[in-house]
Length: 218
Image 1: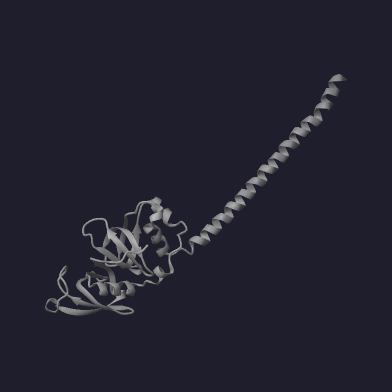
Image 2: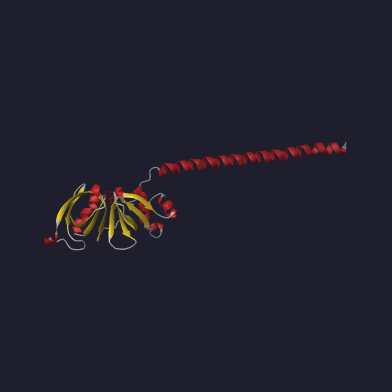
């Protein structure tokens, strides 16, 4: 009889232990569901943000001085050229590059002329982060605007066309969608007697331009 009494007295304790575990399991399950729901919302929000990111915004993070040392990336361009360079400036529709090897001259390339950009995976992920706000002025600096600055500087240039041909000379004028190029030997100043011809070059035909002097934007 005493043994039966001991058994009866142990039943509530056993049930209590099972219910405590049951409620603990429910709390753990609810916490997991909340965490999963929050992660799903965060993932969806991140996907939505990334769907709105532009190439210019990602390149802006490569030239930002706030994100560490400059990244040397590989830029493949429409004329078949591959340049290892750092991003030194960015306009509304163009990027300024400093080649990592060879000539110290600057490069200006329309964003539309970039076919691929190669970089270490860590830098690739870094460029996908939210970009710092850029000045409204930088967003108004078009490819034509920066070329008109080269006109003012009378800087000798090499214009690399999407066809693979290279024209050297000085840009005399830059319109809304084209430039006037006075042809002469590379590295020499523009002199009337040195000019061998003139070309109208549509911006759409330009893959990249090498210049001895180019403005730097951040």
